[in-house]
Amino acid sequence: MRPVAFLVVVAVWVGLWGSPSWANLMTGIGVALALALLLKGSAGSADRHVVHPLAMVSLVLWFVVELVKANVVVAWEIVRPGSRIVPGVVAVPLRTGSRLCATILANVITLTPGTLSIEVDLEARLLFVHALKAPDPEALRSELGAIQDRVLRAIAPVGD
Image (cartoon, rainbow, N blue to C red):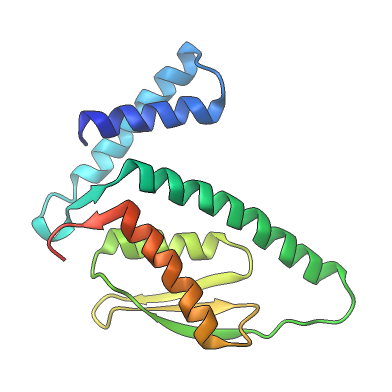
């Protein structure tokens, strides 16, 4: 992990806690070190990525907003009488063979209420997603493609 990325992780950690205490600073350093060790294993040229800090912050902020919106939609669906759920499964073409990018994309989708990543097929470059509201599969596929764009802007695979 580069020194700038290391400092960004520490700064984001301290910022998320909202208090620049020594405990938060030390924990942030620990988290940054753990991430550096975890990401060190992907040293092969096919597994290298460039992390764009501003795009990563944008992705995280966008995800938090989408998470809140999805929770409200799912909660409203639960409490209102009559179901308007139209479930469906779509195959989303992956624009990268990066395991890291596919994992992040699948997790962002799964962590959002109402959607679930079912399977990632890196050889065929497909991600299969189940959604509670999928009346228009093409619109859902397009929406999931936009999420993929955000992930790929934040973490760009090198040589893919």
